[in-house]
Image (cartoon, rainbow, N blue to C red; front, side, top):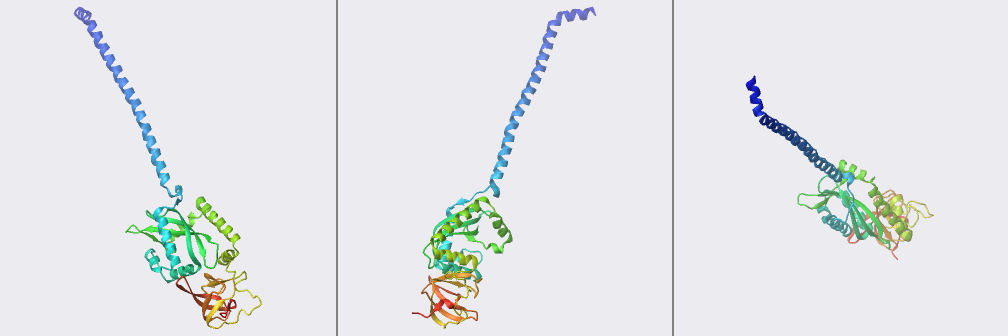
Length: 312
């Protein structure tokens, strides 16, 4: 025991130095752990920010956050080309840029061709469709109607898709219920409602400045208005009297041409006073089937017989 005490006395300072070294190592170990822990906490913050950015980007790309794009170059060019073809009666061109073209569509476009003389001031507003490369397009233009001086501000809706060759084509939405529902739902969008209201106001202002345009718009909306009288009204003339077949002329300021002998028939166009038509046949209820040519396109439709007279 005395020997141990003597050894401890001789080596005490070395033992204390060793214990001090061990203590320093323990303190250093815990210090490193603390610094490492703080570093880990700081590194987690950027990860949270990155996660927020991804979420924001996803919201931005969602259809609900999209806004109308005005005059997208390829869409504006396509719409201008399409309606120019309609006015010119270039149905081969229309068939080449449509996914579906049949006799019914042709008849409707012929009716539009007979009613519109020219289109100008094209503006397009588009939103992304249901698939990549597809668009819901709202096409604005001023339509110069046959026999009416004031152009009618017009807004039309089209659905376009990009084909395998990268070209835009018109899609018949009546053939696709999903697209039809999508375009219908979009009409409730505040931005699109504002656009439609703006065009309606422009049309109302144009109608207020031109009585003929006002009558035409009323006839499209309600099925009335040849020279301010109802298509089927009894104004004291014998509306059931037949007119001779052959060349006759319009004897009123403006006369509706319809697809069927009825005030509910599709409005094919409007003829002005003095316009010559070929009467093909008469019905038993005061209508005459006529043929006439507008802008190189031959149209056949029905007019009230009482508003036709012999050529002077």
